[in-house]
Length: 387
Image (cartoon, rainbow, N blue to C red; front, side, top):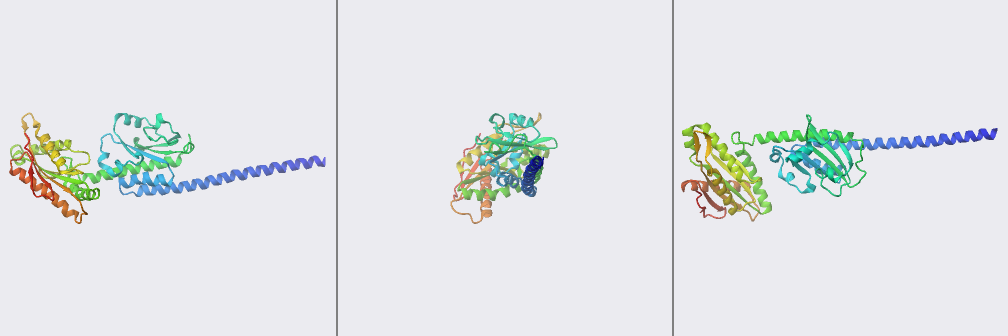
């Protein structure tokens, strides 16, 4: 009997010890999870504060691309933003918009892309990377698992942020995504606010009438492009344009018709230019064009195309007012071979040289372009008059 009691007691003690070990292991797991979650929360708070403190859309996107990826040891990340009206291309700097770094940023404007974004689940999804389902979001054959975070504002998807890992188990299906859900909300708010701020900045740099850039924007970009041209040792050209006999249009038909002519001419000039060229209404009926990475011959070709685009078709105001409008142009080019000491003075020289060439075009009959050549040259060469 005593042996039996002893055996039972021993077994109970063993069971108790086993339970204690299990409880202790469970407690340690919970404690480790708590520490891990606390550490994770601190990292999320760190990146969230940085996102909210970003002073521009450029800084914000660099934080998402570089600092978030580094802090959370992501192997890849992509950001896709809805851009149906192509407005974001004017708001996001080329330095990040055209960067080749793992194709981080994509602006969606094609109908197929917008349709895919529309039908993307509104909740965060995680799991194994599937090329058929995920390639349009992240085109990287090394990715094994992915987290897809829709960015939603006021019930509308403004984009989607994706994180990818080379580890198949990093983003498991149905994994807890509370932190990611919170991050996606804050990211969406910050992106929307940053873009609205850029729109506000742009509105102060846009001519109210023609909707092209204004003189303030042009004067701001000119030294930036000259500095970049100097670093890359490439040419930069400038066009000065003036609508011929514009005063007579205002005097004959009124300023309403003159405004209409200005808008149509601005649109025609824009159709000739490339995406990285800078067109600005410089004052009255004058326009200035900055042509980065453009030599003198190419600048003259662009000037001739603008002249043709403006006078090729008559400007239709209404059935009673149809006008033939021509434009004159002056062209100058800068090719630096040494460091620039005074960018402001050089920019002023580039502009004044093109302006003087424009004056010569007016004197020689209008509806033509005059080439001032390189700043180092004094000879001006007239291009053939367009018909």
